[in-house]
Image 1 (cartoon, rainbow, N blue to C red):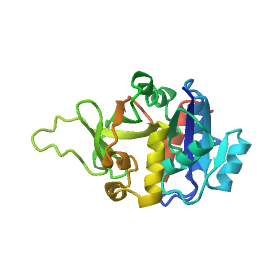
Image 2 (image 1 turned 90 degrees about the vertical axis):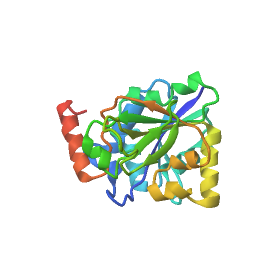
Image 3 (image 1 turned 60 degrees about the vertical axis):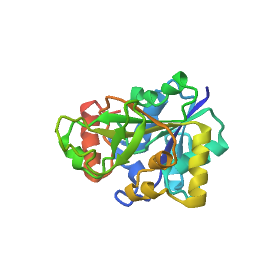
Image 4 (image 1 turned 90 degrees about the horizontal axis):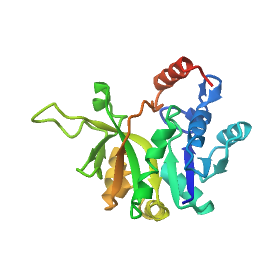
Length: 248
């Protein structure tokens, strides 16, 4: 099975412009993500997919494979879809460019279920929420699954609501996805024809496009200490962690 890793990276972020190039102990954030991906033995190749020449230039300066993609894409998965049109593979792994602490074994967790289930089309990761603040933090998508860990819904709200008991473990999304080519084509074709799906647009969580349209998204629980960089404060947290680990 040929497996391609793709790291979507755009410069124009509303909350944090230029985020992929933010400095972390002397290296841009996108470099840290790429290095973690390169440690995943199952992946044959890894690419950064961007629409910005500044990111492309930094990638080339740091020996990172990079592919220029359209400026019209609405989601990172659309950007992965364009890469899939240019480079054929059996599986595409979408790794977010704002998680520089993502562990290689965590990325592998999105790949391994495809060896066990040939019918599987999509995987996504989740991890138990350890910080109660994250339960009410709207920047943290919460994952709700059925008994087989198939996704039912994702939301930025506190859900499900613990009406009868507080003895409930909440899970947050870890933004690593595995896509078979057919599922990826559906996502991109739907976007070109209809834009974002109804609830996907409301919550601004792209994996909901699959769930809304009846796709079975397999959730894999991982124990991950990753920190998604959504704000400058998040960036400082990551810098401090990297310094404690000894830097590059």
